[in-house]
Image (cartoon, rainbow, N blue to C red; front, side, top):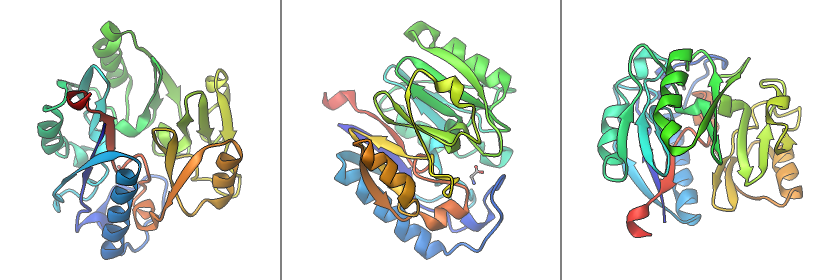
Length: 258
Ligand code: GLY
């Protein structure tokens, strides 16, 4: 059984942090409806979805991915790079503590979960404005005993590493080569996004398929051609807040039901 931790959309989402996206009006009711459909998609793919109540004083709190890293062995509470987001983790840690032993990134380290891409025993971490060298070094020390290798990866023109590259099958990554050096990932089969869809590299892998924004049909076709099952969801309002499919959940294995 997979667990997916999510959090309802904050009424203040329009006041979210933005780095590489221009501010545009967000329809909160529509965002909430899209988020509901997203949760249903996770359930349809076999996840047990846990929904935390909205934190209206924290505009970005729907993007739960950024506040924690969940591995089979432990979970690590991050210290998000944006100061406005540092209080978001408290309620998530209360839930995660039921499933994993918890560790934490300490000041002055910063890590956003959106920068952390684990593929097998390798953890790629975006060297973005949100995740600094101290945070990456702390992560390396915390996971070394479990046999993980941590590799820093420069990113540019995007918020997080997972804006630029995500895993869509065991050996396959979906990549936006203008935002991250594809040579870093030369050992994997790579699917490039369609150049007309620059924001299309963020897919959420669940089991043998992915949850994916409906607004990128060309890249979706490239994945279908590669044999990947795609469940499309409309996330237009959350995308205006510089969030996407991976950002809205923390998905991990529940060993208590294994
Ligand atoms: N709005 C998502 C973030 O900047 O953290």
